[in-house]
Amino acid sequence: DSCAPSTSTTTTNSNKSSDRGGGESKEDNNNNDEEALTVAAEMAAAKLERIGFAVGYRLTERLAQFKTWNAVPNQDAAAAVAAQQLEAVKFLCKEVWMNLFGKQIDKLQTNHRGVFVLKDLNLQWLTRFPSGTEQARVTAIRLLAYPCGLIRGCLSNLGIPAVVSCDFLADGQNMAACSFNIKVK
Image (tube, rainbow, N blue to C red; front, side):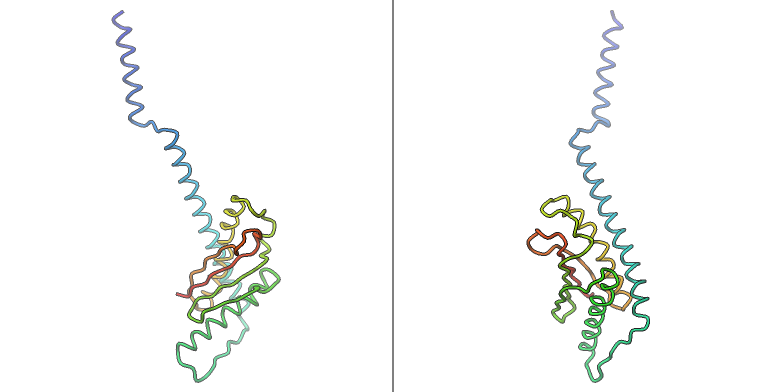
């Protein structure tokens, strides 16, 4: 009889100590799983961007090998830099995009102060994504890290350090319509 209570007391105490020491609630586990998935997704997007950068850099090296760049004489330094940046982005929109996607960029906009917006109204890689679903949108945004890297690598090879971001165009009905925003550093 004296052994039974001590055994049950020991069992109860060991359960309490395991609950305090390492036990986590399901909510904590779910939060940790979500954080791990988010970190993994960000790492995958960063890796896609780095791969895109390397491909864009090498492709531009090959395509620009025999290209002559027009220098306009009698320009001040700021105007010459702006003209060089515009020529480089035009090269990207015409030559590089044609080699990658078989077509030119649909629209190029600039404020002539180092900000460029490239619009592709039918990006081939995104044409088969279903419109209207959040999962497709998230996946497409992750996939767009690669062409962002391509653009950044191309410009880097041409001597223009830049930050590139992307988004879908307004309505969300056409997943293939996207814009790439370039901010020259």
